[in-house]
Length: 182
Image 1 (tube, rainbow, N blue to C red):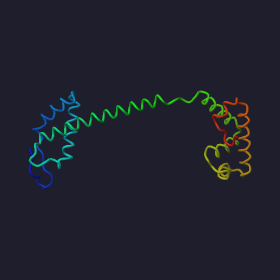
Image 2 (image 1 turned 90 degrees about the vertical axis):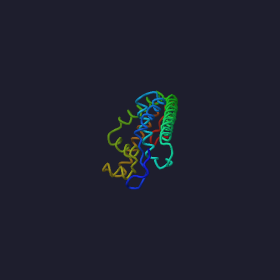
Image 3 (image 1 turned 180 degrees about the horizontal axis):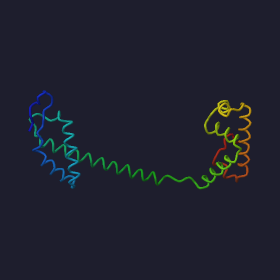
Image 4 (image 1 turned 180 degrees about the vertical axis):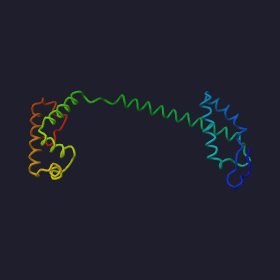
């Protein structure tokens, strides 16, 4: 039953205790599961509280609450269907993704191996410039060497990697670009 105003004069208060039996029965009928029905009633009561200002004074409280239960159930169905569609579409994306070709992985391992075979000072200089993105002067400062020395180390490192590149079959050369390579 609806009380006109509470003591503070704000929103009307609802006496929903008498409506809980109807709400639970209807929710069980819709959801076909007691636990889901309780969740549905809870959600509906939260919505009713949030939207209590939309209840028409003198209206049928039971019918209003039952319509909220119904709408909450329909919204849940739509949400589950939408989620199922998203999951299905994600499944198609997973099926469409292709693992990297084995030869690309092999090629990457070859470049990595050649990089690690470089002398420490060449590998360090090339790493600072090519991987970390430092300018030559920043890399020279970080290494504690003159700029010309750093540039010479990078040049020798690139030449060693190009030499390794020249020893590979032609079809393997197009997968990765050696920094500073042709």
